[in-house]
Amino acid sequence: MSANNTVIQKSRYTEGSIGLHVLQLSSVMIFGFLAMTLGSLIELYYIGQIGTSALAAVAFMFPLTMALNAFTRGIGIGASTLIAQAMGQSDQQRTSEIVTHCYLLVTTLTVLIAFALSVLSESVLATLGASGEVLNLSTQYSRIWLLGFPAMGLAMVSNGLIRAYGNPTFPGYIMTIAPVIQVLVGPVLIFGWLGIAPMGLNGAGWAFVMGGLAQLALAAYWYLFKARLVYNSLKHFSTNCRQILKVGLPAAATNLIQPVSLGLVTYLLAGFGDEVIAGFGIASRIESVVGMVVIGISTSVVPLVGQNWSAGLVDRVNYSLRICYIGCLAWGATAAVIMWFGADFFVSAINEDAAVMTVAVAFLHIVPLSIGFMGMMTVATHGFNALRRPIPALWLSIARLILVYLPLALIGRALFGYIGVFWATAIANLVLGIISAAWLHRLIATLTSRPDSTTA
Image (cartoon, rainbow, N blue to C red; front, side, top):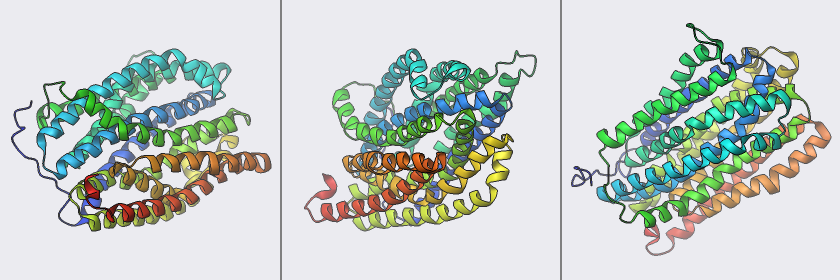
């Protein structure tokens, strides 16, 4: 065990201003998420200089990258809920044990997944609708990108673990270093600067790998030297893995609904041509920049709700959720205005092809209207997970895809083309955002009426 296991790290979110805690937790993650999405957007600008085929290739790869990110975040959530509970009870040894065993579990899973997908990536991308030159470009890019996935996955999981541990600042450093490397090194590899042979789209893949390794180095520094949470034993490893996966797998499945939806959108749009796919790819990246604000707000839920629920402070749990809902709706309204008036400018800065711009601007006039409600659903999802009740979040995500989005998308596509697909996304976000918040409120009321509910 680590040398500092006798030192008790007290929970930090069971006292003090909840609003200030939400601000501190959210602001760091928002900054990190914005750095990531802005870096991705700048990288997309570089790729746009290669051509429409390269943009379409990245758009086909986007659901796959989102799915892998969603899976690893879900496993991290499973561990973070356990850490938040241990921190709420000031149990440092239990914290070290969970963190170490989580890292071992995630390393094994990400390496196996990366290997499997490197073999199957061409078939997966073809299933999404990629073909010809676009399929070849996307397959080559994916196989390079997958080399960096284990490092990126471990770093991503570390962000949640560090926040649950009570450090809201360090994850921002981990999240920021990769996009900085991608922005600075990407054009050197893509265009062949400084005497390096131009690699095109593959250069963007290698820049991602380098960024992932840099993130992993920072995460390892926190684990080994800053927090010193090494636990030198495999005792309870299988038990801890089961407890992590009890929440982690449903959370991962819940997170996977969004990339599955994105894959479905990509499939539904593929029949309209590469220009529509490219426009959708650009617009979804732009929308993700403003959408990351509500995602950042929602990430404060697990440490806040987890620690306060474990300590039996139900009023602080409810107040934390309420503040997060209000923050999401306020930013959602702001983002919709920004996208409505700035869509043409943002899209033209990346690609000025008229057909691509028409699609991208239409998307940005419709989907951002629902960002606040998407944030509400994400807050509620994290709330279910923080209570270690992940199944309602999974059912809600499945219902959003199968019962709401898919029927609306098919009807919208038949009646209005790709515009109908975009409207289906916005309506699904609105409906499920309201339902999710109501369900979580009812669950908390039910649990608090039972004896010893906060320790269940």
